[in-house]
Length: 102
Image (spheres, rainbow, N blue to C red):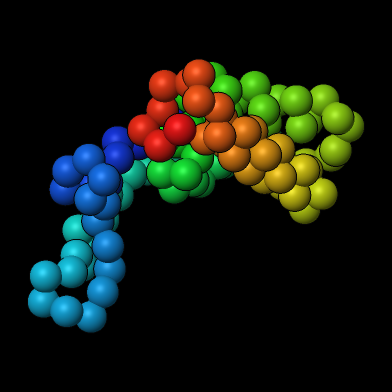
């Protein structure tokens, strides 16, 4: 699994594209090169995902989605996305978890 660094100026202040002078530019974005193979799954998420779930929890959730029997197609992506959404929301509401916004 690979996770890029947060793209933010400071905690809670992410890079943002906009139309005013102080906004970040597309050229400010991080670029990286990853070598993927057929069957690899790429998870892109915002702070709503990554502030609530660890890389291990994301991986476990995607693996559980695959174990549900979905082939690697749009159905699997839908199942995986819904499972991640559900888990991230559950954690964000859990007052016993230590996350930035729970």
